[in-house]
Length: 547
Image 1 (tube, rainbow, N blue to C red):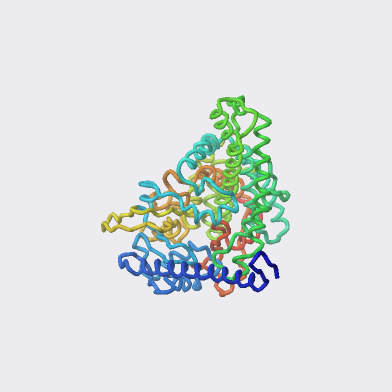
Image 2: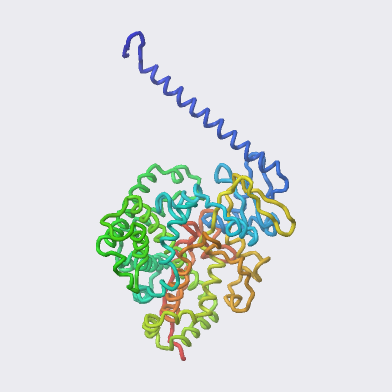
């Protein structure tokens, strides 16, 4: 016991005080929880015109989502569940569906109509749903990344990096992309010789990160031959992201997660920062304005130098911090689309040998029958890849069936979406507005036989432009879409005629379901949508062909 003047403080008094504070905090939290629960449940039940599945007075739409989730593999990506939910409850023709997922997820309006998508992404673009996006992006890139920020901050960084991602500039970097692809071919030849199962997504990720390192930073990361600290920290960070379908408290709120996030962030930012400092200190971008092969980092520094009025001897810390963040965005988003797309290209073509034969014939017609000539021809004349019409159709079809990501926007008070046919207005206030690509891409209102792999549809005029949204549209469309298409075509040109790759079936998740529409290589959430288990595959050398 401690005596202070007329007051006595005992261990019992302290204990009671602490317990009292905890009780008050828990009571306040409970009241807040109940108030928000009542608010959302009443909001959804009070508006009968909101297109939505059956709503439970206590659980909202959590029960119907759980029912649909359990009818599919438990590890499937959430956007894969949506078409089944909408089909089950007759909602696929509604254009927008409202889901009350609180408190597990934020209440949302899911758009699956191209016209409504236009309204929120191009007509009067809603700001990105920064809070929702940062759950994934903050650990990977840091704060104020250009994917989630809006306003002047986004405009500035988009202006800084736009020149580097222009197709005309990217074509000057093709020789470096070819070099990394040739390394990939050697790696695949070794896998073919071994006969062992290879994690194809891991192999393609190493390739695309090598390409991103070269294109963005002019660095040879060489991750296809040996581990690199940047890539290892990046992969670790993805593995520590909270799983969306996990309800085990220990896994969902793992006590080590904050420390691992901090450690991996420190590692990644240190490496990227070192690359940025090296480029800044070893050259003045304004002196090399005539250099043809410029990495994107140099073009960003040119903009910075011009803003500062010429040569300067140090970078502002604010610019440096933000530049590192945006470069981490490119590492994350830049590897994502291409690595998964290449996996699915090989997977689908292995199922349709006649389509593989057509793609290979196109490559023979463009580059000749000698496989070794393609790399040198592309280096000398990069525009040759523009002749790959059927291969481009394959890429577009894969991105339709397996979009890597979607766009989420923040709803605003007074902003309503309007159904052009009925004139009905749909509110967005307090909602996350999810422009979900997959439900649009597999909706038979916009596509003939949407679940079928038919690249030919892109050559036969069967497509609806606004209904293809893997990179989204409007001012916030993906800055790297030209790079993704270009590098995918280069990879196809150098690999399709060399290898046959067949995905292997994997152990099913806990509920025993292992297929989606008869497909065992379905998409799972690993930072973005990726093939299940990394698509373990057998690689074989393609048999010699008679030309």
